[in-house]
Amino acid sequence: EILMTQSPGILSLSPGEAATLSCRASQSVTKLAWYQQKPGQAPRLLIYGTSTRATGIPARFSGSGSGTEFTLTVTSLQSEDFAIYYCQQYNNWPRGTFGQGTKVELK
Amino acid sequence: QVQLVQSGSELREPGASVKVSCKTSGYTFRTYAINWVRQAPGQGLEWMGWINTNTGNPTYAQGFTGRFVFSVDTSISTAYLQINSLKADDTGVYYCAKTTPVGALDPWGQGTLVTVSS
Image 1 (cartoon, rainbow over the protein chains, first blue to last red):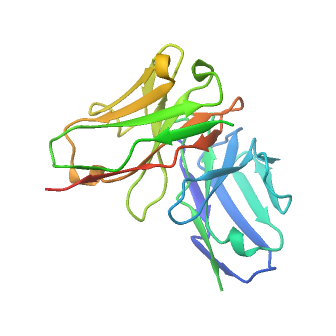
Image 2 (cartoon, rainbow over the protein chains, first blue to last red):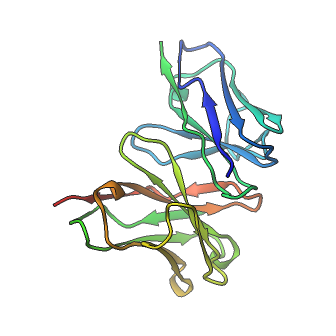
């Protein structure tokens, strides 16, 4: 079974700063997505296929990586970007494993 | 546009059953699978499995076999999650989400809060 581990658990940043979130898989994966969840809301797809932005997602969000190491970068954080971010692998069984999440909070 | 609208909050006693619906619109229902995801209070996302909306064949993740049942009614483009023999630790928000052509989950339903308490 593939395990997804995200780090750090909490990232305290100020608006305008860059955020770098990490996601590590216990074995190589080829399909990785990132989701954003705000309090009281459903998750929203940000990135799929490791690096492709979903429809309507601003260019300040970018994804990279391969194999077992993946990164979500948010350049110049906006107020609406403070949220919890989850990575998910979706090609190996179990097909939908999520990481435990990284909270990006206001410093 | 594509929308998934879930049924409202539910309160059940331990041992009872609950059925959550996920009504879809804006696309051909049978084309894409529906996934179910649980979020316990204050916790992260837990993928429960998915259902092939064309064949009705469900696939359950580890930990969601036995008491959990996925089903569909293609005539009304709706997916269902039934949980039997409810336990207190089934409490949480349950989301349905459509599988995209590339396999990620988008969009998601608004979530259904299921509370199990006596």
